[in-house]
Image 1 (cartoon, rainbow, N blue to C red):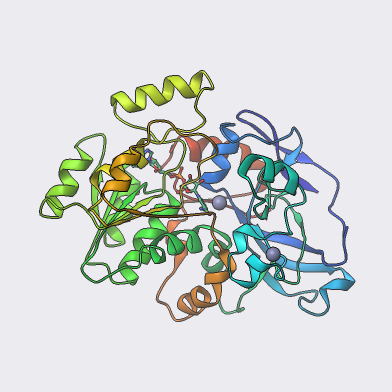
Image 2: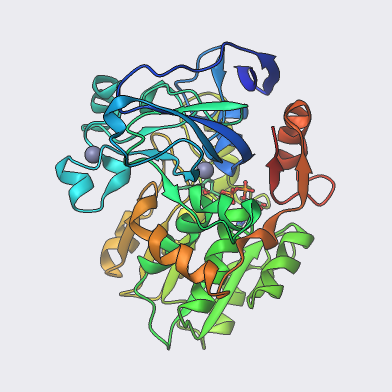
Length: 390
Ligand SMILES: NC(=O)c1ccc[n+]([C@@H]2O[C@H](COP(=O)([O-])OP(=O)(O)OC[C@H]3O[C@@H](n4cnc5c(N)ncnc54)[C@H](O)[C@@H]3O)[C@@H](O)[C@H]2O)c1
Ligand SMILES: [Zn+2]
Ligand SMILES: [Zn+2]
């Protein structure tokens, strides 16, 4: 089959590779009808996230048709069924899965020992996302092997198109969880850093969940336009001070809820802290660039909440922990517990409350994938979200 394969920093190619096969009895094989490139894939493309190997198949936002099931799937999935595959692989039986904490499933990461060493405990296996999370082949391919397939799937109604449901795999529940974890009150101002696909879903979710005011921060004009169309007030951080504007919008008090949908590759306009991060990251003395985290802690209203869906990899420097502690801020974070939210989200899409397909700007075939990684990373050609049809 053909697949998008990682070969090193900024080197992704469309290669011919062996078709996946059933390896365990709870596996299924999916014929991929649509998949997408995520902002998290960019951390692998730029190689800021460790743990990739030459030859790894990319992709964790995938949907398609079941073409083969192992005998342990026991009727939970049948050939011909149409499913979206969550990026988190889940066993459905461990203590964490039983509590709905799917992204920290205790069983699905087959490289548990590596994750435990790095983080103190294992986290879930993820598709196409480094050997720290299991080294599983991803779904930017013609076929995908789904481990624990009896649990690792989302069934979707035939009345909804691929483009309406594909993002149930990741960015929609990610934006949603980021907002739900803020416990929105009708009096809240929610400030969302990053108007990428995750930020866009967070804007729509915060509006839907009844925040008084939603503010979105970025510097890419078409992304800010899209956030405004979703109901946000926008701040261009390359043109104005984020802190002054947020204070102005909240009568000097700061937003109650702050969401980081940027993550480890934050940009900033020549602030001292961002120059420090760039220098340290270049010398491999710091893994991440946490400019947004520092800004959020500084501007968040005391007793407010900081919600962090943005991905961080390792060790972060100069986090103003004194401000965080003395202001009594709550921090909520995590890879998304996808299946925890998807029944509700499928219903909301079906009822027309939400249509996540608004975010798609590019539709291509697999062979255009490598080029699209660059276009998406560089935010060229108005690119906000790429959908690939293998
Ligand atoms: N927690 C999860 O389960 C989960 C799931 C999906 C994605 N993510 C993460 O969410 C983050 C966003 O993903 P995406 O697909 O939207 O990516 P993206 O790269 O398209 O979007 C990031 C946006 O942040 C903006 N940005 C950069 N620096 C900024 C700053 N200082 N202030 C405000 N905005 C700034 C960029 O211009 C860009 O538009 C990534 O870190 C990704 O890894 C996490
Ligand atoms: Zn993702
Ligand atoms: Zn589990």
